Image (cartoon, rainbow, N blue to C red; front, side):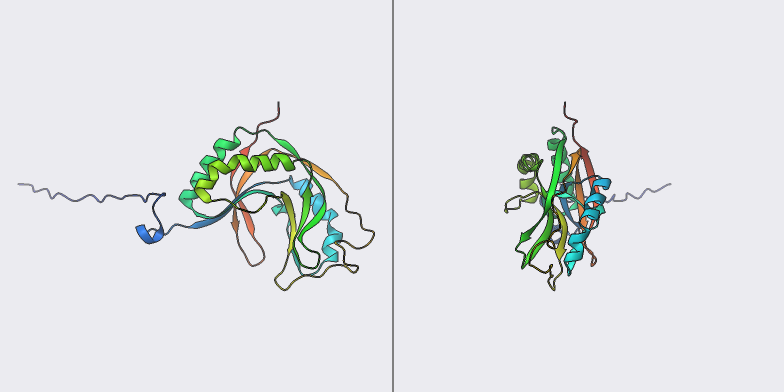
Length: 220
């Protein structure tokens, strides 16, 4: 006579992303620091970097951004677990599929803060300022309930560099650039896609890895 032993089959219940934290459900979820951005083409980024060589030479104590990392942030989303990031992907894609590409113009170097204590060295955005601001606001209803929202005033820009912790020192004369150096070169590119980046913080500076790319519709 054969005997069959009934065995219990284990049941695995996936954590609910809306209610689960690593403390309450015992699952450790990796946090990712993410943001949405528009990036210039590689050749435009290299041209800007080359043109701003005199700015880099004039200021010491600054961590300058590699041109491969140049971007204009649309929305900074902070640190979120993988479930939240997936919701960000879905919600962003639903909004961005409706938007057309547009021109963006960089029209000169500037800074945030003061020349005595600059917080950022930037490339200013001229044309495209309105479109970037409108696109950001269009994303707000979809993303704010998921990841929160920055309260500060939005000023689209490209970050050229930021001072190191010990501070920085500029050119003689107290200006942004040495006397006689022009700051009026203009670059224009077509913003054809929006990228969801993961920012990985490293001692030498952040590393940006694309998680999702959404092409914008070509203008009719």
